[in-house]
Structure formats: C-alpha cells, structure tokens
Image (cartoon, rainbow, N blue to C red):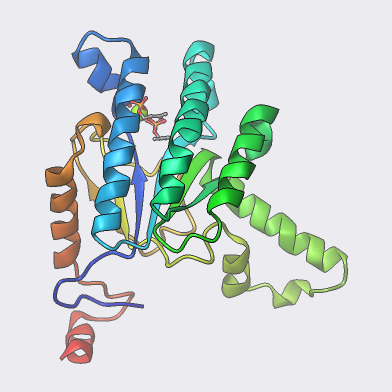
Length: 247
Ligand code: IPE
Ligand code: IPE
Ligand code: MG
C-alpha cells in the first residue's frame, strides 16, 4: 500500500458522474440533454487520464437503483449507452483502451449484451488505460455475487467455509485484478457513495466537487489530482510512522 510521497498520483480513479439532470434543468433543457453532454465529458476524462498515465478509470454510468427513474429516462439512458458504445468502440480500440463493463448485465437487452461482449472481446488485449463502466451496478450486488461464487465452491467441496477470509472474498469482487481505487470523485455536490464500489472504496481518498458532470473539465480534474497529491495515506498507522517510512 502506498503512502503519501512527493507528486503522489492516483493509479485508479473511480468517478460518480452526477449532475447531468441539474445541468440540463439550469438550461431549461430536457434531462436527456444533460446525459448527452455527459457523454462528451466521458470522452474528455478518458483522454485526460490517458495523458496523465492513470492505469484505471471506473465510471458509474447506471446504478442498480436507477431503474426507479421514469421509464422514458431509463430507456433513453439505455439507448445512449448503446449508441455511445457503438460509436466509440473503434476509437477506444485505436487508443489502446481496454474496456470492461461491470454490473448485472443480464437485465440489458440481448442486443446491448452482445455489443458489450463484442466490445470487451475487441479490446481485451489492449495495454493502455483500463476503462471500466459500471452499468446496472450496485456495491451490494457485487458483494452478494462474490459471496455466491464462494458458496458454490463450498458446495462443490473445493473450499471449507472456515477458509473464507477477507483476501479470498476480495479475489471474487469486481476489479480484483486492477490496482485498488485510490481516488474517488463525485461531481454534482452530493456527498454520498450511492451504492458504488462499497468493498473497493474501503481506503480510497474521497473528493467531492459541486461541479456538474457536463461541466467537469481539465481544470476541475486537475484540482482533484492536486487534492489527492496532498493526502497522507496512513492505512491505520500514525503520521509519524508514515513519515519515517518515507524519509
Ligand atoms: C447522473 O446524473 C447520471 C445518472 C445517474 C445516469 P443525474 O441524472 O443523476 O443528474 P441529477 O443528479 O439529476 O442532476
Ligand atoms: C449515482 O447517481 C449513480 C450514477 C451516477 C450512475 P444518482 O444521481 O442516481 O444518485 P442518488 O440517487 O442521488 O444517490
Ligand atoms: Mg443524480
């Protein structure tokens, strides 16, 4: 685990992209216009992360609770996701991006599921930034799925329930193969985690900004990175211990 060092940079940034609806409302536009503008921000942020040598970027696009929104908004969001994926996949591939989608994909249309599988297949050997889109994702769902996989191994006699510990469960949780998220950003002013990566965020540095997602740009992103650079990551130890270690 890394502690604060000079020019400390995050390896894995996880973002709750919030505020699209309010951005549109401010402009007397339908909420959909905010989501559309949000896609442009996604493109900007991927580019910025690639330029800054960030190894992984996880973006919360649709939560398991977002089905509670009006039917029409849900269906517009699904269409937008599908169109953006179709339109961007070749460029992502060209830019060496390795794409994966986490979340309960079974709830998506067959067509969207196929598109996701193809996009993941196309980019799986790329060595550039790992781009993760969390769609129909919930932190609770993630922990339940990991638990089910362990339970199945116990049932099959491959594992004893007494063998289950934190590190074993961690191997079954989404993103286990990536560096742990070290910087969490939420735009849009709310100060909550909204069932995003609950397990994975245990020791992540949190950064909240009032900037609405469609307005999130290089300058606001730089502020988040600057804030991260000043954090001392102690992981339970004292400041003195950490300073000694870095001396
Ligand atoms: C985030 O923006 C996008 C999704 C949840 C899909 P919102 O749509 O939540 O925007 P606000 O919070 O209503 O402004
Ligand atoms: C969280 O935003 C989910 C995504 C950004 C995809 P919400 O806007 O849905 O969160 P709550 O409901 O305000 O907590
Ligand atoms: Mg919101």
